[in-house]
Length: 131
Image 1 (cartoon, rainbow, N blue to C red):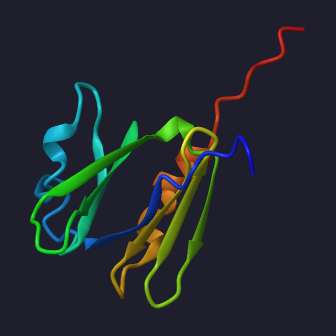
Image 2: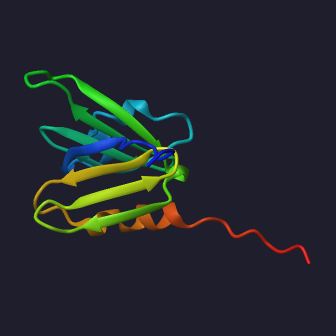
């Protein structure tokens, strides 16, 4: 379909919840002043850091490489999401500017860890009627 953004993240394996908390994330150094980390995941194939302003996604690149390709999505660009709590929990983020991003979490990841972040992401301040 013309005009539709391509899939931004085809399928990133972002691991499970980091036991040591957000400070344990390899992505913590990418925060900007005023941005706070809220949830971090990690595994052998990649990781994700959900922050007050963005979601940062790191994926292993190449077959034998230890390099990580990092992608960022502004939180305010996310307009919808779906969660499939199958064997591997799948989170699909959707936005007009980036298309879709598919994140796969390790077996046993509780999707309720994402509920607050996702809920706050879709809540927009209401514009008051001046009349």
